[in-house]
Length: 252
Ligand code: NAD
Image (cartoon, rainbow, N blue to C red; front, top):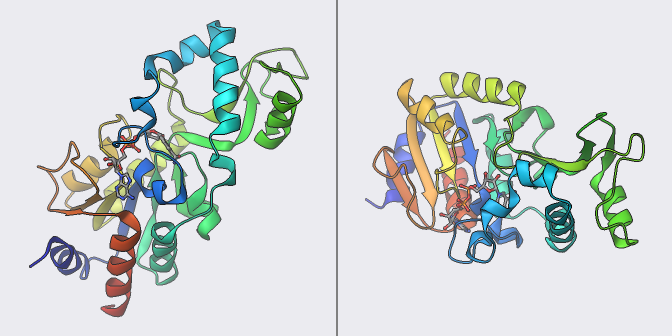
């Protein structure tokens, strides 16, 4: 039996699926991952982009804004993998998605906000780290395009930052609690497009597995949980999830 058939057999009787997604679900939308063969970390040193460096070094902020302008994340569109999860949601088979991604593509594909927990924030908004004022990222990118390399808060002059969680920055409490609740209540967890090496996020599928859920991984390339999962399905997320969702909905 192929690993995909094994996954279908394992997941068919389990009604409450939780999806845990990483950067690999969005590479087919043109957004590079971090640790894949063409990942961002093959070109850039991640230690340059810690929260500490962001708040202390204007050069880091300038580079961050330039990377944000050129990243293409704000223009990306959902792909078949995001849409397959929407199909599972519409069929009543998906509890929700816990995502490490910041691209908003699950919601763009059609999942309601309450079905998505964003553990690492999102790129849609920018906040002042001092007074909490907030803007859309488009508004701030327009200021960068107009020549402000390190745009300050227009209210208090403080440092502003896209609402994503950087290395060394605390995870959002409400999202972490919700992810833990979903992990404890699901019958199966499917991790998609993640090396499962970024903690504490990668505890979510582990917690689900520890509380009795089946654990399926869909990923191109090895992950840190390959020995823990019940089934590992190697392959591209779009094609694999489309097949998986179609069969699970047909088998319902
Ligand atoms: P990662 O870069 O560590 O791992 C991605 C994995 O997905 C790799 O194993 C890669 O080989 C695999 N992959 C790539 N394309 C795939 C495809 N089409 N189908 C199946 N698998 C594919 O990503 P991670 O585990 O999510 O951790 C990276 C961190 O970076 C996350 O915390 C996330 O916040 C952030 N990030 C987010 C985005 C985004 O929002 N799209 C992009 C880059 C990084």
